Length: 598
Image 1 (cartoon, rainbow, N blue to C red):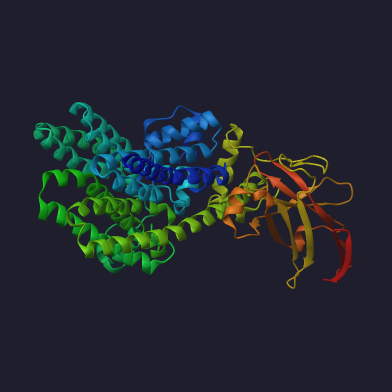
Image 2 (spheres, rainbow, N blue to C red; image 1 turned 90 degrees about the horizontal axis):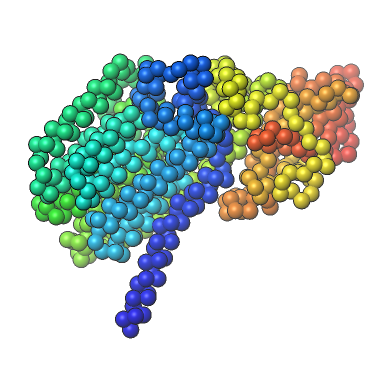
């Protein structure tokens, strides 16, 4: 009987461990499958500008310490530049660093959970819920944008410091490692300065428990923090394009609305009002827990267990305050941006663990059980919706990113500057100059295309058992006088698909000329099929073309384009244009000829 109970206990534990592992596993597969090797937006500034400067001369201290908005990104610069040299600036390596930082945070949360939650069931359940949030796909901007790995540095530094502080290693090592991690966070992202505030109470409380001289801990922390902040603030200037932080006092209603929405965004990233209500409720529950644990109980053992979770909660509250002060004037809708969800996530995680700690005192009260059941149900429902929405955003992001990459690679052939400014970088002139410099030193892969590698129909793409890649099945004249081209292509089992469709024309025996790019759109809403078995999915494409782009007598063809090797594969179907004066033309697609009136 006892053996059966033990086996059941072990099986249930293994199920919980599996549930904890499945979250990072699914996210890892999504990142591997839908990440795109192309510098995007801020990456052209950091580390793009540094890469160009490093190829021209020895980098100076000022260049390494250069601000990116409000942040000094010294340590990310070191990592990004090293990775760029090792991988020919494969930006997917930066996404790997982001994922590994999230894994580090997860491991730290597990260790803290084991230290502070002695009930093994509660410990594992809390960890499963925490991992669901840490690796939530709804943070898609941070997962698929290598530069955004900096948003994980501060929480990684804080949680690692807490694990070290609560360990039995010598106090000298605790102080040195915690201060080094705080300095790294400070010179990685603007909210890294909060590490000096958040980690200190944990050090002080543990020094009291371990009977270490508080004066030495305080003195060391003040000196280390002061030196770091002095270096950080030297020649620091607030970016001119950002509004004054005093607006939180001059526009308090907007500030509160933005702040509460940001804190509720991990659960309601698509609903502003629900996110604001959730944020306010989370603040109230967090304040109630802090009052109960720190003021009413005044039990040193309970305070010691709850300390890291309370401090992680305050880290989120302070980070949300900094974000609100710096971004609220851009628009309240930015409070739900997926890049900020990473900050707000850790307030929810801290509440999960504080619920577990408080339950040991008041867990038997019926009202508390009802609240826990209601909140758990709400969490499961919202997470399911957010997971599906996150996967959908990740898949859509892939097709938009490869569309932008195609526009970048063909800038000398097609020159679609509007696409570049919307999908890659908002300043196309600056981008074009920098892209040429990076291409010259061999760090833009596969490089700016001078001539597209047109593949004949006998050549097969890996994983394609036939010669058919898709169809060019429509070419018609719109009412506004422009042409509409459309069709579909097959996906690939080795990547989500061939990336885009390039339209080309040929006049008699002259060389084929690419003149337009079409983005792809999945034909199905079945996210599982798209992520796991994309080879069975068709992707549609369409493109509106100005008549000015086409010469008389052109034969138009469509080609599936692979941005990894700049090869183009033919789609079945052609369109022949024969102009008769300025009135009539003939279009032939898939060997069907029809006469239309222009």
